[in-house]
Image (cartoon, rainbow, N blue to C red; front, side, top):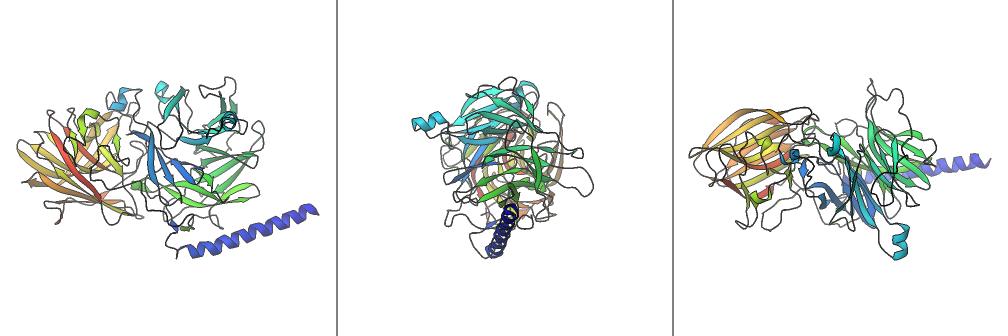
Length: 549
């Protein structure tokens, strides 16, 4: 009888919770501080999210971009800012320097972020530390796992150790301070207490995938809640009527068997089904899921949803298991922040929102040679944009975006190319080239072909759509992006005075291609030499248009 009573009470509690949330959800749209999905309409794949005190911290994949492993912070899950990068550059191979191949679509992958305070730290009154673990998607020693640590999420981050490769892994600290890494498809190993290496002989296969689960089953994210262990993963069955989904495995004992349940299977906003992410709690004890969704040319965006504990499972979505358009605000009155920002280049350090394409050549760029301007020197003779060092980029964002750059190209040399691009494996490019003494602006479509193993650039197909002769070296370039469903369109403009704009070229269809760069389209500034070095371009500003928040 008591079991039936508990079951009825539990069912009544869940029903009341669903009714309450449904009522609240319908009222969120009218609230100006409501969180609208996507929570981050920009390329922020493979998220791991934790809370420390009243702050949420998020890490994402940026692969071949430097600095890498961005750490983002928010107090309300709406306004996010980048507060640090785990590392400035990777140096395992000349490929990271665009020599002897590239690391397009590889580099840092699926980083795990944790905060842990050991028993010894508690006794000593120390506050604990942040940890990240990631493994580049490479073969051999280039794919060895990195573990970094920091006292504060803002850094500085210190390399702790390197060890064997763990694919799409999750670092996990248990209550007894033992440390594990869960990786691949249901594989686990224990790490030494100092995180210097694995405990040999500790490998376990904790579950086997189901027979029909022939697609993805990866992206491990592991937490512990009320004595149970929970492992979240992305899953996909390649069969008619089956979709990408988020599944959860749970157990009360790491050495025992695991149960499995689908906790989310939902499309959203006219785009495909979401998958891969994690859950996080608030100071008040509420839980949320943060799961990415593929959205074509803009990349993989983050969606936010309630997480309701039902029968000991973290069920994601609204009362119908769907991604809600609006989510109630966590904290009111937080200042507006963004992971993409305008820049006047009026400081001596580079804005944290920028990342270089592969390792930069530090001697070839400056914010001080001409105060208030970013100077990009040519530093290596190359054949194309995809091999050009010191290309600087920020994310493009949805639903629409617009960015303008002001350039002084009076110091380009014969054969130099500089400009502004919607950069990806297939790029729309505004390229100013100097031919003899003449400057010419081309709107181009560029597509790179890479070798499978070394990711070496085999060729770049360049189609010039429209050209304009320039009689001045000071000009403005603008790229507008439209990432609404079915669009993914970039349009291109130039101006000789910063006020009157001329469209150039045709609308360009942006694409996401996991075989090449494996990321969303980015705004990119570039300057490179095709004949001899010594020239440079100056950038006065990068300004986001009124569609940016």
